[in-house]
Amino acid sequence: MKKDVPYHHGARHEDTNPLLSWWAGGIGIGLVLIVAVGLVQPIGVSAQYVVLDGVLLHAVLPDVASRSPYLAKAAQGWTLATYEFFFVLGIPLGALAATVATARFRTRVVPIEWRRRFGSNPGRRLVWSFVGGFLLLFGARFGGGCTSGHMISGISQLAISSFVFSVALFISGIVTARVLYRDGGSRC
Amino acid sequence: MLTLVLGLVLGAAFGALLKLSGASSHTKIVNALRLKDLTIMKLILMAIGVGLMGVYLLDLFGLANMKVKELYLLGLILAGVIFGVGFALTGYCPGTALAACAEGKPDAWVTVLGGLCGALVFAFMFPGVEESLLTVGRYGPVTLPGLIGIHALWIAVPLGIVCIWLAMRLPEPGGAQ
Picture 1 (tube, rainbow over the protein chains, first blue to last red):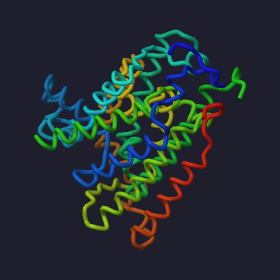
Picture 2: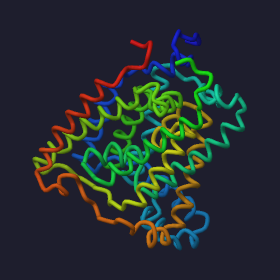
Picture 3: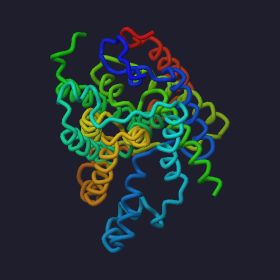
């Protein structure tokens, strides 16, 4: 499966042709949300980054951790044994199982679209991935949710806050991607 | 204990779906934001369309455990803008980064590490941020039907159908079947 298929983005087959079609994946995610709302609560991911931060910090520097009311509230009891954390823990496990089951384990440091624009220097990609991740979670906690919690769960509950956050996110993401990946060399 | 298992199972299903539908691929996300491959938009719209109708159907029987997030206009817009920049930079969101981690992608590991730092910094900025930015345009957990004052089903079902219709209408990526 190493061969490039004729595809105008020039990306590899695995990246551009997912196994599940958008509608099957969308229905599946919608169903996960419905089951979660029916049994426990809507799905969410980003708060658990704070929980992990809190629990780790509390293990090393309990005084510092306790001083933050935000950490203390998010990581109640300084424990990871919660439904919410286990949901987030399940994500990489499920993805790993799916990767192994479909034999599509293929790693790289620099993704193709990044390489096309910024070259194949892995250090550069990793530094900007860190910065991106920082902004991602800073923004998500600031806004009170991420793509799962705000966009999928939030809009499914018709929350105005989620409409506002999602519109701002997409406008910003689209503008940034335009600037970042300036489509000079692309032919489409 | 049972809830932990339930969490793990639902999370695993979510992670597997993200992976199998290409949502954890940098290429897919970045090309979605560049408006070159709308598969991810179609996926999200479909999920929202199904979720919207399902959640309010549950609600009709009093079975939906909802959790509506608070509206604070200025803060949310700033937060969305910051998130969007990060999203375009890494090509992952907080959930898909975790799925990509499991696929052995080092840039996703670093994204998660950056995310833990970003979340920590926000946590220590919190009391200050709450007093200043989060109070501008603060309205509490409002929903669209609550705002208009009609039964939620009258919005949920048509909007759900519109989402699914839009998901079907948006073009498939060029060349692919």
